[in-house]
Image (cartoon, rainbow, N blue to C red; front, side):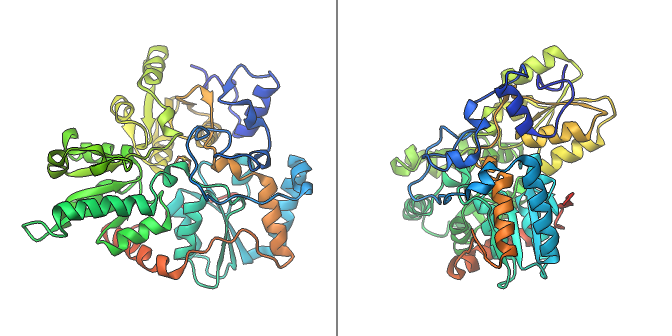
Length: 441
Ligand code: SF4
């Protein structure tokens, strides 16, 4: 099997691949030709922009990015690279750059740390001397970093339009309305004295939802600790309200033995989420109807095709994938799990991965001893991660050099305080190190 229909020699740069596809120099395909444009073109239109979540509905009032100065839009890749390096060298220890696993290679090469959202937020806390934390990820990640950093530190998101379509699928008003319906039905406490419902939010959610959990006896989870967090919640309550990702909630609870019929889905557009009172009464985990458009692209058919082409193939997927995909895979786990799985595999392994293409391409380039490919044959990166282009990184860094802070993300203390309560509960339930790996920047 070739490394993904994407060329015999895996390039870590998905952007280069997209340019090759656009030029007709690769037999791979992308989900839209608009990926070849700079993200500043997408900033002028409604929606999340080209990539996996381009069909999702963007909430009214989502942050928009103002115009990027022309000099950054027209600069070549090499010029931007040199400008980022120069600005970073000038700023020295005053700045720390964090790069999410799903970022493009042209950003990751400048990152001081590479990791998942929570690993990066915690890495930032180890750099209290850095005045500015430039978070090359999406909005909720920058919010978390702001809440965990010191009051003197400024957290910067290079492109304000880099949201997360999954996080946007659960807003504080809809969740509060759901909660009120559940409280009306059950009251706060069940007959055994435990909470009737414990809210659990995935890290991929707004600070307001983390605060909601902090204020209502709830907790935050990540994709690596969701099972431990659910156990924590079941010790304290009769049932869990899990948001925003239905798939992580379903996959985790199913692996813990919760029957599917006790995991109804809550659609906020309908009374009782579209369920009967009996179903809600019998529930153990109420799943919000959110999903990640990147991980929703993976299918059982893709796995079957990979197995038919190479019987030795090992399939590993992220738990944000649909249940059928997780069930058909050989393993499922967080980005950290996937990285460790690849690193520990026998040389010569063939590994099909179900997660974001930038991470898969990087793993393929870092591990030439294996054949690694993305299960999705179509190149379709996360729309919002894709908004962080080197032009924006060069701009925010050069503004810092000039003594100006642009694109600062600030969570009001009235939200940050209860949100930290929910984060602290997670840390008490699941102690951990930062886990972020030093980057190449
Ligand atoms: S990969 Fe999915 S969950 Fe992650 S930022 Fe993109 S849309 Fe959000």
